[in-house]
Length: 438
Image (cartoon, rainbow, N blue to C red; front, side, top):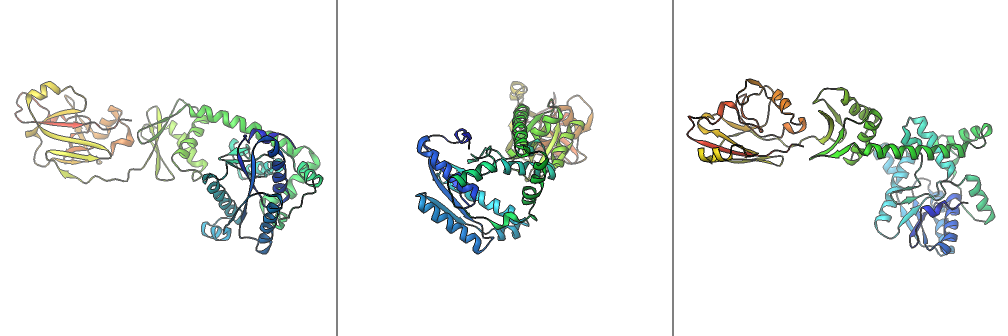
C-alpha cells in the first residue's frame, strides 16, 4: 500500500467508502479506518443494493451491514432498480447499475452528510478501462483512464496493484464476499480482466503498471491541451464562441468544452465535433446543427454556438408605439426637424419621413427575397446588406424591421434611402432601436 490517499483526503473530512462487500472495497475501508486514526479524517460507508442478483445481492448487503456494525462504522444504505432503468433506457444492466450508483453518490454528497466518496478502483481497474476505451474508439481523454478525483468521488487505490490488495486482505485476515457475476466473461470488462490482461501479462509481466503509467501521461497531456484550448473560448450574448486562430486540434477540444457548457454533455459524437471544426474551411454564415437544439455557425474570424430561436414574431401593421422581440425593443414616436438635426448622429436613433412610409408599412422579421436601399446607394438583397455590415448571422432573425412588401424601409440597423428625411420633409418619425451585436 502507498500514501497516494494523502493527495485526496484533507484533515477534518468525512469520507464514505463505497462498500460492496467485495475484497477491494473491504480492504479500502480497513485501510482508511487505520489511516484516519493518525491523519485526522473520519470514515463511514455507503452500500447500494442494485436489485440485480436477487438473494445473492441481499446477502452481500447484509454482510456489509454486519461488517459496519462490528467495526462501529456508520452506514448509508440505498436500494435501486437497475433492471427497470436498463429496460426503460435500452442500456445494459452494467450501465444502468453504474448510473444509479453514481446518482446516489451525488445525492449523498449534496446532502452534506459526507465530504467525499471513496471507491476501490485500483491499478488493474484503470488498465481495463483504458483498454476498453481504446477498443471502442477513443480520444486522448479516454486513454487517460479513471480520474483519481472527480466531482467528489476519490480513488485512493488507483496506483495500488491488485496483488497488493490481495496481500493486504490476507495479512489482515479480512472477510469479504465474492460477486459471482465478476466471472461472467460475456461481460466485456470481465473478458478483458480474465482473458486479455492475463494473456498480455504472460508476455509483459508489468503490463498493468505500464498501462497505468501510460494513462497518467495521457491525462497530464490531455489536461495541458484542454488548458490551451480554453484560451480560444469566449462568452457571447447567447452562448459561446471560439476564435478561428485555434488550430484544428485545439479547435476540436474547445468545441467539446463549449458543448458541455451548453448542457449537451455526452449527447454529442465525434462527427458533431468534426462538423464544427470543418466550419473553419467554410464561408461566413455556414452552420452545423448539434444536439440539444444547438447550432454552431461560422462568423468571420470565429465560430459561435447558440440555441435555436424558439420565438416567432407575428407581423403587425406599423403604428406609433413600441415593439419587442428577443429582448430587443423598437420605439417609434413623433418627432421634429429640430430634434432630427440635434440627434441624427446619435447611436441607436433613426429618423424617417412619416409621409414616405405608406399605408402598407408593417413591422416584422426578415424573409427570403427582402431587398434594401441604403443611403445614397443602390438596392441590394437584405442578406448581402447584412454581410456588408458584418452583422452576426445568428442575430439576423431577431431584428425587427419595417417593411412594405419585400422592400425593407428600416433594416434594424439603418433607415432606407426610400424614407430618409430630406429638404421636403414635414412630418418626422423617430425610431429608437439598439439590437444586440455580439
